[in-house]
Length: 498
Image (cartoon, rainbow, N blue to C red; front, side, top):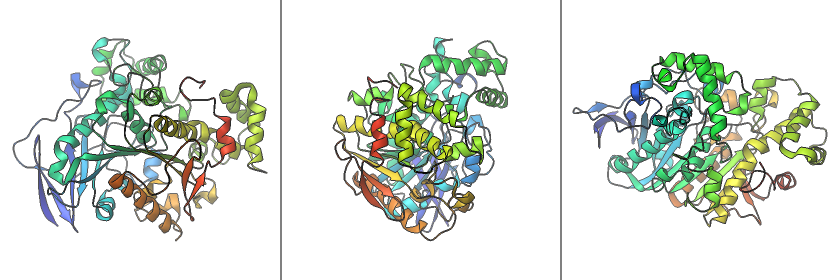
């Protein structure tokens, strides 16, 4: 191993080169978001004079522990509000080669996660694709998504400072990545779950335009942005549990106490409600992102999006364990989305799954509502605006836990990152040899999209709906589960119900 030195606008950083890949960890891209800067947009990092060591990842953003992050190999979080706004870089060369750049935005329901989670090592993307990989942290939970605009205009945009952090990281990439061998004119953003939703928000955020040139949204799209009144109700709950009367009281609250108030407020809501997340605040996000994209006002970049087949098994397993839900619960969920059409809709879902139990029907219905249909809406909006768009569908089922998780949320991550051998990942994927070919296909497709803006299969359009299915056999399928997809045609699109 040898030292690597790169210059940034704030000062020089020292990384390490091993086996041809240079790695820089914990590089600040913004100032400490503490004190009077809490709940406010990020400022530039404080400059330094000496060469700064970038050999270890920084502490992560304040957050509670997460069972899913533990499954993905992350240790219990060591967090620090003052030093969390950092990024990590993997590059084949600290030179002027102007390689494509991939910027990863982690998931975690906007309350957990970090760019330094072991599965997100950019080494294999750098080795296999000759690309520069950047993974970032951003403010989470109440620190990044607490809507205070209605209480004090001095905090305008507070409900989206986590998104503003991502934009600041992209500005850092624009201004600095050439010194790390990257091309600031060929930046692909990609993310999963809350990271995928963040990608969708960045497509629509005016301040992000021009900072990236392609986008991949995995299991997260445009339909999960809070209206201001819903965000204000979450704020009220946090303030009640924090026992403060105004935003200034929250500014002065110790970080640990704010995390505790966030956890208490979250406990009052369903697990999948995502109480902390982007807000259509008229500041960072002037409109609901889907409307912005459908109108052609934003996001004029090639897009790749998709989901796993059984996203919701992971969440239902956490909520219900191995128990079957009450049939009445399935009826209630269907009525939420379809009103008086509930019997017609459930008949279609049951016909596609002869002999299925209530858990399987509930999984299919809620997977479509929360993940698959929003991804399709994103693709449709991009296509209507004349932007090249591709769709994927990950259907391989994990054998762990007796197969109950099937093709669950986050299961595609070790395949995209070619990280099947990372410690702890067999708890999620098992260790079967069939995984290898799927990982090679997905990893190669993501590299191709970053390099050429084409993952290697036909683009999506509402007539054919060509979709790459990643499984033991990878193949293009047209309009998968189309009979169920068609049920949602009047739900969730701009100008329609939902």
